[in-house]
Amino acid sequence: MTVADFIDLRSDTVTRPTAGMREAMATAEVGDDVYAEDPTVTALEADVAALFGHEAALFAPTGSMANQIALQLVVPAGDELLCDADAHVVTYEIGAAAAYGGISSRTWPAVGAEIDPDVVAGMIRPDGYFAVPTRAIAVEQTHNRGGGGVIPLATLRELRRVADEHGLALHCDGARIWHAHVADGVPLAEYGTLFDTLSVCLSKGLGAPVGSLVVGSAEKIARARFIRKRMGGGMRQVGILAAAGRYALANHIDRLAEDHAKAARLAEAVAPFGVLAGPVRTNIVPLDLTKHPLDAKALATAARADGLLISVLGPRTARLVTHMDVADAAIDRAAETLTRLLRA
Image 1: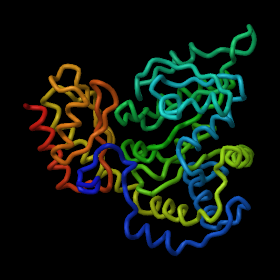
Image 2: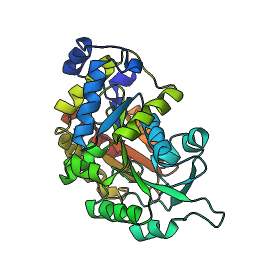
Image 3: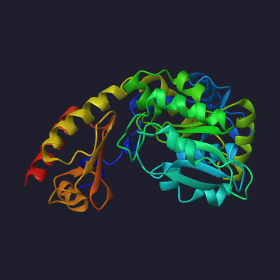
């Protein structure tokens, strides 16, 4: 049995390009992007910048690189970034902020999307006193380890006020910001007005095979291009990949609502067993098995034996993620499998 034979709910990164996306890739006009001569990349960057109401954007091969480029734009080496303890930038990026940017990170307790701006404000360290000065705040929209939670617009506006009051930058790890846009109806440009920099991902729910973008001012993105090259991210005829991203933006944003509905169905199936870790707002269903006889590894092993793949995030923490490659019938089978295993 190959991975293709499983119902794969491990992540929305496992999606495969659609037929229409493959056609767009095959016919893409290309050039050398290190020389800024790839017209498809240039068009993608202009598209994304316009969506968020910013001056410019830069195509990067991965979300981690896009985040780390953005952080280096707003936090000088030796200074401090504030974020939450479960943030992707300090959990899943292998210490890159420190290793590449010389950035010191300090975190508030993990609360997913339920951020208290007063707590964040109380952590800010000013210049002087031989302490590391805070230069930027980073948030994650939607929040991966926070169960796909959506940070409310009012919270983001208050964080913007806090950042302005203290002369700080505000960065958004917007890997799944498209989901927040669909879930709450907040225009992408309104999100854009709140942040100095954003990273946005094309290879998760939107289904492109690769790629993220850094979004910001023209001045910042000019410097970002230099940082990307330093990090090994200079690419050549990459319009083939940018074409997939342009196709995804044109065809796959609105359909994210389908993934949210599928996640809600899975949440309804597992809720009676007391393992739902929190409300399901988007395409991520978080499972807390603390009070269940099965731990996360045992559940994942049993599910795999029945043709279902799920993620293990901790000894008693698991995750289901819906995406465009999981059909309604597969969601029904996954719900049946999980119900049977959790009931046993």
